[in-house]
Each structure stands twice: as structure tokens, then as C-alpha cells.
Length: 326
Image 1 (cartoon, rainbow, N blue to C red):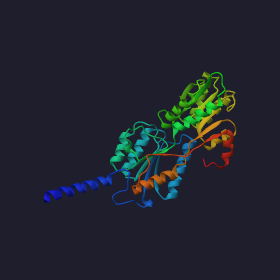
Image 2: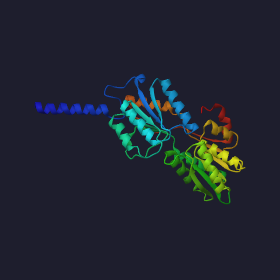
Image 3: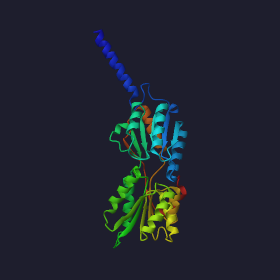
Image 4: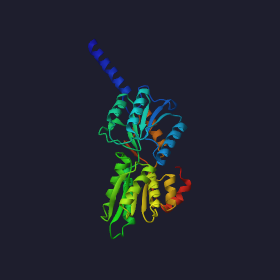
């Protein structure tokens, strides 16, 4: 009888210990005070105006909420993000959040976080892991839908075209979720009109300098291009420089669609140089804090949380610009 009771007690102890290290809920001691929470955030970098706005919003939101934020800049390198996440694991932070540079190659470090009992939140970009238990939730945009919105504008703009409409596509960072999904969404949408044809598609790495450099080369190869689809404002702004240097008028000779709706992009749209912008909202700080608080309390969090976003024509951008927060 004593042996049976001893085994039962040991089993109960093991169960309790397992509960202390389980990801996705409060510790066995109950929720912490908000002021005692520590969150580690591994940012992609500072490659664009959108990313800068995203970083500022997250940092200011956590400061306002009184939650300690440990922040790292990966400079667009996956190995730097993995190093930062491992550092947060060693520091035993309460939650790890990060925007993955690329979709693949995260399982090992995410398993390390899970084994350490530290919940992980994905922001802005997803991972392609088949084991969705490795993260609590993904907070961010629906990039496929963004691509479709861009494609649908192109369909409407060129609905009366009788011949081929050559399109140049400036892709984001190769292997990143926004680049993959926006490419897919746009292609799916324009497939409804065979006259719309992507004649060149190349990465500009989400940077203004990359957009300018790539567009300069592609304009020489495709001088008859009628539409540019730049997968973020910064690449589009760089491309505008190349278009103007080539003696063409952006927004007229070459119609331009971009994504993000940052201040500089909206200004270019208001000036008529960008015809259509698909918004990608970088202001995720307050939503991320609510997720962290729910995790701390052991409450359920939806596996996918989509940010609210809209689109802007040139006229709408001009009207909205004075009150934009980013």
C-alpha cells in the first residue's frame, strides 16, 4: 500500500513539474504582475520605413504598458535572430516574439523555446513549420489578400486593354512570407485577364536602394512596361527614381502599385506618382501586449490574428496623409 501511495505521489510531482514548464499558459505560481513581465523581441532589421514604424510602435507600446522589452535587430539575417532567441531563452524571459526574416529553418530553436517553457509569438511574418504547437499565435497581415487587392486594381485599371500589358514585379526578401504570399495573391488575381503579363520579377529585398537598382536594369530590358507592382513602398520609391531617370513619368507612363502605406509612400501617391497602395499596418504594439497578457494569465489565444487594413488610391492617400501615424 505504501509503495502504491509513493508511486502516486511521484506521479503527481512529475505532473506538477510538467505543468510548470508547459508552454502557452501561466506558471504554476499563477500570473505575474504586468510590471514583472519580461518579453524578448527579435526584429528583422530596419530595411524600410514600415519596419522602422513597426519597431517604434512596439517599443513605445511596451514602455507605456510598463512591460520590460528586450529588443534585438537581426539586420535581415536569420542567424542573428536565432542567436537572439537563444539569448532570450537563456535569460528566461516570459514570452519571446519575433518577425521571421524568412519562413523556413525555425523548428530547432522554437523547440528549444518550447522545452524551456517559453511561449513564442510570431509577428508580421509566419513560419512554415508543420508543428504549430511551437508558437502560440501569429499576429500580422494576410499577405495573400494584399497581393490579391493589388492584382484586382490592375484588373480594373487595364480591363479595356486589347493587347499585352507588360508588368514588372519587384519582390521582397527571397523566402520571406510577404514576398511569397504577395506574389501568389497578385498572380492569382491577374490570371483572370491573360493580357496582364508579368515580364520580369526580381527581388529588391524590400529596400529603396534595391528597388532603384533592379528597376534600372529591368527598364533597359523591358522599356515598354506599363505597370509596376512593387511589394513595398520603399522598393516602389526607389523604382520611381529609376523611372524618372529614364525620362518616363511615374504614375502615368508606368502605373505603380505598392504595399505598406508608409508616410513616404502615401506622399508619393498623393503626388500622383503611385496609383494604388495596399495598406500593411505596422502598428501592432498594443495587440502584442494584449496577447502577452493573455498568455501570462493562461487564457486561450487565437492561433491567427489578422490586423485591420485598407487600400488607397492617389486621391484617398492625399486625403488621409495629414492624419497618418506612420
